[in-house]
Picture 1: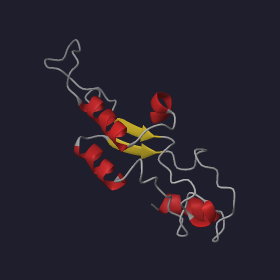
Picture 2 (picture 1 turned 90 degrees about the horizontal axis):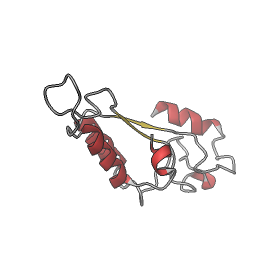
Picture 3 (picture 1 turned 180 degrees about the horizontal axis):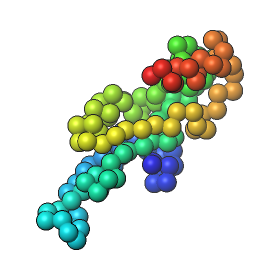
Picture 4 (picture 1 turned 60 degrees about the vertical axis):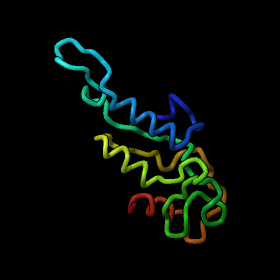
Amino acid sequence: RSWYAYYTRMNQGMIENVIDALTARNRSVAGWDAPVSLCDLGYCMAGIDEGWEGCGLGVNGSQHFLNGTPATNLQLFPDMPGLVRYGHSKGVKMGWYFNGCGCWDRREPAGGWEVEYEGDIRR
């Protein structure tokens, strides 16, 4: 998980480097005939906790759009779908922490608070 390595200070390139590190076959393991990756050994998920959110970009200054989907910080993660495709192309599962404390939604969205959580679940 990104939290332990980067806290909230990360970007798309850093997560791509994590994916590369998980899939690099550069480790020797007793009982294996060839070099292996962490992914070969079962460590095959890149998780982003905080820092990807578009704090204040959503409705009423929240991190969610009116339809409930979360806003992404495009300065740090300019192509989130591309990042997911990159991870998947290397056999890595991708995950996000959706409702954390990286942004605090201080004002109720126009559609109500439930718009945030329902939108997260639908996507």
